[in-house]
Length: 327
Ligand code: SAM
Ligand code: SF4
Image 1 (cartoon, protein in one colour):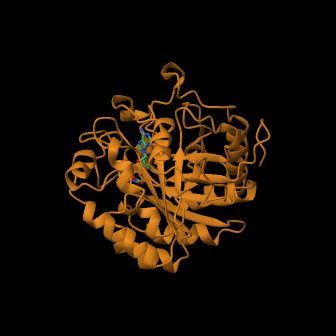
Image 2: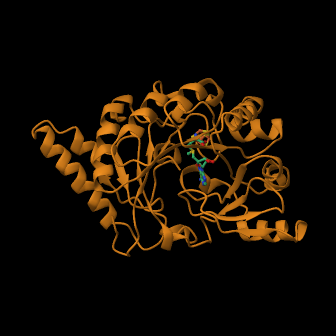
């Protein structure tokens, strides 16, 4: 599918739950209100929407949340998405806590890659950020996933005054193992508004000062807007997702499906198309509903704006929290 600005839209992120087993302070602090279970799309509904999306031209899906692995049956869902005609790739974004437990079934259904969120290698800092003492479990999951041969990317959000300095320790992952480490600028979405981001421009300057022989890495690494570099001889790469200042929108290729079935053209704005409402209609028959879902997907693509406005807080109209949207 082409949007109004000539971009090819072939990637959909699907948030399968807003529940999570961590309490990251910028995403889901204690006590947040949850979406009623009855509003969350069933797996059958998700697969039906995904099939319509594939017919319309979506080729890659990312399963996200909340924490996707807290929803029972996540590996089976990945398997069903992989079976849809036209789908080339299904990947997962997880905090990694339950990943080692579900690695076998995920590998068995052919999961194509995993993004694991890891903001620090310090156990106390991990607990301060996520509210839970689970760092060792996440590190174990990273090791086992690499051993299994599933491509791993680490996602790291740096916050000023808390883990801003951790980039130096985190980039060491790229030296010995084929792991990409990506720094995602904290965005003013949901509770992210309450904390101060570390900007990638500043981080890249520090990295170049420390490693003057840093090399740009032009290879395609996935579906995202990251710009990559590589330490000489390193097995993995270092990526920068500059959500705040890097206007990567010219290369945007995605739609987002929230846990209650709202299809979002852009992370920054509240505009969305209610596919959940369409699929739950009583009147029309199955074929008519499928036709309406495809139409809604095309409508969401047509609504994609030229670019986000994260750099100006007033321009950010999205009020949903990241746990519902899926990052
Ligand atoms: N629970 C899974 C995880 O943590 O990877 C998947 C969902 S989580 C919402 C997806 C990603 O969004 C995580 O890497 C998280 O760090 C990031 N995230 C959450 N809130 C954010 C914000 N305000 N700005 C930037 N990234 C954010
Ligand atoms: Fe949970 Fe991921 Fe949000 Fe952390 S970032 S609270 S792990 S959904």
